[in-house]
Amino acid sequence: MLADQLGFDYIVGAEHHFSSYGFLPYPLLLIPLLAERTQHIRFSTAVVVLPLRNPIQLAEEIAMLDIVTNGRVEVGFGTGYQAYEFERFGVNLAENRAMFEEALDLITKLLSTENVSHQGRYWNLPETTILPRPITQPHPPFWRATSSVPTMAWSLEHGLKVITGGTASSMDRIINNWHLFQDAVELANVPWPQEFIIQRGVYVSDSEEDAKAMLPHAVWHTRTARGLSANALPVHAGRAMTELTAQVAEEDDPAFLYKDWFFGTPEIVAEKIYRMTQYTGVTYLNCTFNIGQIPHHKAVRSMELFATKVMPHFRQYVPDQSVYPRRGDAPDPQGYFAWEEGMPLTFG
Image 1 (tube, rainbow, N blue to C red):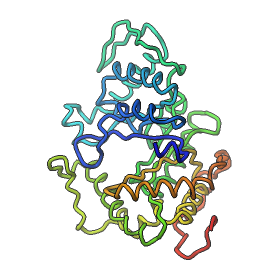
Image 2: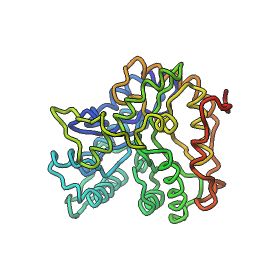
Image 3: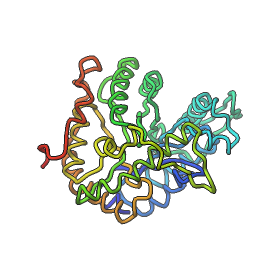
């Protein structure tokens, strides 16, 4: 697969249902096929929506995936947020957090120990040992999607990696989440370094003109994500009926998105990433290349340019997270946007 050949570290699948916002209802089902066709790349999810799954069966599937990928699988979990999806599964969105916590606890026990019994609010299980057993001990690495300090702290205490900020999140929110993460590390009383994973929309092009021409796809993405989250977006025959002619909000203004998202030539995208590293101690950058309806050949070219002309600048990058200033002493996040077209580039 191209991502493996280009030297990417992970392929990450996102679970979405019943609308054109996402076409991957069960990302774990795709992993065996990808594993058979790749050699080095690892796999994860951002995320599996736990309240929509049976945790007992899911634990069995994770164990199997750990074996068939020879230990190359990790699993990101989330509570879910789209009422449109929950309604169609007959699951109460208001109970998603309680269901998530019980399901994650049960999955962790089933993968890490034998002879597990469980009496809970949502699931009951007599003494059970799942088979086969995972080869990664005590279980494959877990990620948790959250932007809450207490939840981040709990995740850190339990050895989970934290992923925060969906693709549609602004850079202001990413920087804010970094400061929340600093608070969570202190609350959890765990040492640095810790994995801090973020997601960004990425489109790398040979020209700025072409990069800007793809911005309507970013507008569609932000508006669709916001509409589905608010349960305010109609869906017809699976198509999210996103309104693109309405008054432009700041978060989906094309000029704003061009500064905020990683769109541009390789030099410009590298500059944006470099500036991000001055404000956050990010350790994983989860790139969303397939945004809206960007033509496939353009998304492939974007991946190639990112891998060959952007990634090399950061291959040796390891942030010293302990020295980043806390919120009160940090530079104004608006400084991230101080770069303008025509200014000198760090990697120019």
